[in-house]
Image (cartoon, rainbow, N blue to C red; front, side, top):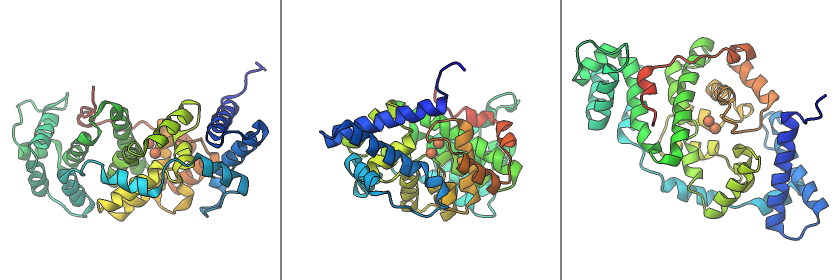
Amino acid sequence: MSGQPDPATEAYYRRIAALSLAIEQSARGGATQEVLEIAEAVNHHFAWEPFSGGAETPPDPIAAAGLECLRAATLQDLDLAIARLPVFPAVAQRALQMLMSSDWSGVELEAVASSDQKIAAELIGAANSGPSGARRSISTIAHAISYIGAARAARILYAASLRPLYSSAPLRPLWMHSLAAAQAARTLAESSRAADPDEAFLAGLIHDIGRLAMMMLPAAFQSRFEYLTRAGCEPFLAERMLSGFSHAQAGARALKGWRFPEPLVTAVEFHHQPEKTGDRLAAILFLVEHWSDAGEDVPSAARLRLALERAQLKESDLARLVPQQDRSIQALTYT
Ligand SMILES: [Fe+2]
Ligand SMILES: [Fe+2]
């Protein structure tokens, strides 16, 4: 024995300490013993959630008191934040409608791509890029689509049209995470056959879009969120303690407003809580979050088991996951 606490225990104590301090700051004046008890109760409330079978369990009175004093944003604040988000790109909207329909053609794709000069340029650039690029230079959308294939071109088009939403420096890591998640989700859907690979790709790209809205919540939320996460509280927990909702719910709410297809909204809404839905795409997104090791939530063996079962995968499949990398998609990262 080295005498060092294991990482899970250490993370637990860091979380409790962070919560205690946040509660103490907002309640001002409670005895230390009391504050610790409240912090433990709040943590306990969330720790048991994966075992609730999807039912909403009200917090016990001590945890409820803790959550009350931590609250720094409301659902109304979220609606204001969503209203302030950039308009969802029209070309992305059209590409999505096309991709979600069962039959679409290269001609349709060409029409969508042609409606945005920048996107068209990205598509042509992608067709010319990398070792698989054309020997002769490609200069038209139609040629690009026939050269790289309509399905691949459609994925590039969709990713390229979403990228501007994440162009500011603080959002770039989130864009990289979204690109990686999209490719991992597509690969997992393909190997497990638990979901349509193209739908999984789209879902992976937008799974954390709610974080854009969370970043626009009031300053009190931001400062406390920053404090809690820096001190060791996982973002998914901190969000819910401070507002009662998470980036997953915020994302689903925004997507609903943008009239996204129901299957994508559901997958995004439950991508950290697969037990709350029978949806397989939500399970795939949960597995992708777990695989990406982004540390958005406290690891949960119960949720992992359930998501693996739903996607008909084993933990070893996930450990061996090597997403198929598309160089053209990779080229859409920010440097
Ligand atoms: Fe994520
Ligand atoms: Fe997430």
